[in-house]
Amino acid sequence: MPVLRAFIYLFFTLFLFIPLVAILLTALTGDLVNIPGAFTSIERLTATVGRVAEKLTAEHLLELVTVQRYLDATRNSLLLSAAVALLCVILTLPIAYGLARTALPVKWLIGGLALFPLILPSFIAADGFMLMFGRVGWATQIYQALGGSGVPIDIRSWVAVLITQTLTFSPFALLPMTANFKLIDPVLEEAGQSLGAHRLLTWLTVTAPLAGPGIAASALLVFVITLSDFGAPVILSPRQFPLLSVEAYREMSGYFNWAGAATLALVLAILASFFLYLQRSVLRRGQYAMIAPVAGRRGIVTDRKVTMPLFAYALAFLSFPIALVASVALQSFATTWGWRLLPDGYTLENYAEVLSTSPAIYNSLLLGLGALVVSLVIGAGAAYLVVRGRMTSLDFVGNLPLAIPGVALGIALILTFNSPPVKLTGTAFLLICAYALRRLPHMLRTTAAAIAQVKRDLEEAALNLGATPGLMIWTVVAPLVLPGIIAGCILVFVTVIKEISVTVLLAPARWGPMSLEVFRHLLRGEFYLASAMAMLILAIVAVLQFAAQRLAGERALF
Image 1: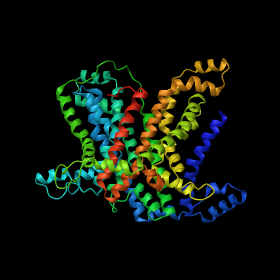
Image 2: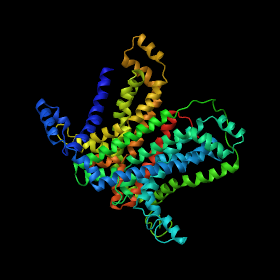
Image 3: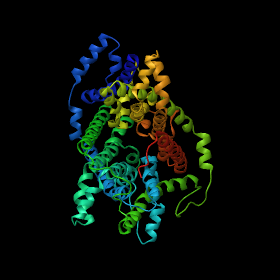
Image 4: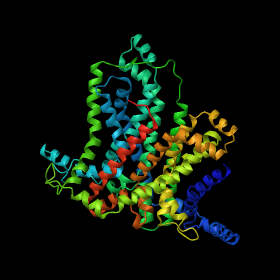
């Protein structure tokens, strides 16, 4: 166990803490600081500390308020994230209430549509949005046929980013609110109605206040996810609407401005961490005790005057993400698609080309398996130490990557491993470690939940019979927690397949995965090939995510 603990902390030190220190020092000095190289000798460490002390300045941090582009990027990111969070809550609140507290027709269908955007990466949603609302998009053609002129929505605008992110991130507001509404005791609502209050008044004065903390926490979660998103903004956001994630990427890969990239990455990480902490604080403070358990169908609204409008609204709203994917799917089979509602012809050549000429699928599988192995060793080991060793500090460290946006982490790793003696930038190994670090919380949570269900008596019995701790874990604990481990492995693999922010910064030329290939096709204007590769990603993600949910043994939310 001491060896496992030391190995886990070494991994987090090398790939999380040192990179975070690296972006801080680069932002404060304006120069690359080779932290791993500094510890190769006392002389180098002394020289590095002296150079850092000599160059220490607040000049680059002050650029956040003196450089207009940085100031605009910070303001725009905060406003856009707040707008997406607010829209997600407002638009999905009726659906969440309908799923939790009413007898919606074909609720299984609404629930399935509600989960659908979870498999949809934002950069693929952005591709679908362009197909719908571009100059020759089918939605634009319908709009013009109805008497409109021009395009209904400019696809290179903040409005396009807002709509795409709202549709993509809506489940992160809808699912927690649905669970929250399910926990509210219907006795409280029935008491209000028995005192003569109208159903709407009861909802406003009883249900909404009880659900308030959960709603606020859902909004903050969407805020953090939107703030960290890179896929939709880099494709749809215009230059005159800078955002932190995109500008940090451009400073690093376009201008090679180390100080500017580090400064923006640092701000992005601090903002995301703060709002994630705020979200968890709201959740903790908003907990309340149930007066009585909700049993059966008690409290379920069956009035068709309520359920039918909710059903129609849910279908209308949830059909938009389906339309985005349907547009990408149609283009993936198209020969050409111009001034017509449907493609001029259909072919499988787009799929044949990406399957035969691109190594992206092979690369994604190898990179995903590599990240899976690393996250399995680190995540499962950390989960056991957290549950059995009660190492709460390790639990905090293991979940810390959730608060670090992908762009910020990618920049931090480049700054850390860009110089000898540990020069890993441009290698598949660094990308694998970045993937594993980003997705460790998935493995940690699923495995920890499975270990918590195993009684300690079984482990103590094995030890009393002479088994070593390692043998006991392998023969007793591992078989019992295997479903949770497999579910965590699948979730890691699924999220790695979809990852774009870390990928565009760290992927070597020879190791471009599927997500990067879609991004490159879009930049080169090869939209048909981009759509074919995007549909392959969606197919893999959909199958594996469904398998993960079944293996985890999760109860149906709806």
